Length: 246
Ligand code: DGL
Image (cartoon, rainbow, N blue to C red):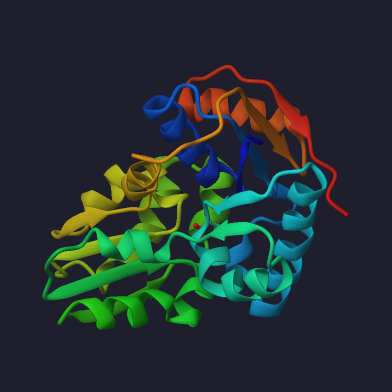
């Protein structure tokens, strides 16, 4: 069995990979951090689809046939497109599993990238499952600040703004895999229960067969820089390779 491919624009996917490794230490994964294109969230749907097509072709080239989009922006904008273009591959998004974990809510706040909010993928999915009001809030600068390892002061300024509209919601979805990295700062600004994509992704590997082996990390940008980012944020020393996507 070939490793599972995991794809995101950067540190959000790293948090997914590390959480999966903790839960399933023998799970074989190849992670591609497409940092050269980060942030995805400020791009058009068409650009996101084109970038994703090249990235999935990169996995296909390595013989990998199952890829998890550890990215809400790609899941909400490019999943159908990728299914059409790669009919023989298993490509999974994370919007449905994230919403499915909410059992009951009156008001759901969705904090996500501009492209995810523009797709209304969360709103649509929530409204088919729950009788809840949905407040969508885009956070255009947050991914770039997280990737840039911005300090708490700077993050606080933008989060004061982004969290204002959703602060009274009983449930808040962190609709971007980068946001759990600033979950404590968000929790200080909203009163509802915070849910993200990491736990349901872990659950999705329960009771299924999965490939056993190592974890290999690639970035499309600067391997040394991602190594440093991972060391600073996750306190993990790992090797990162250069992924050349055509
Ligand atoms: N972590 C991603 C997401 O879940 C990508 C964010 C971005 O690159 O803008 O949406």
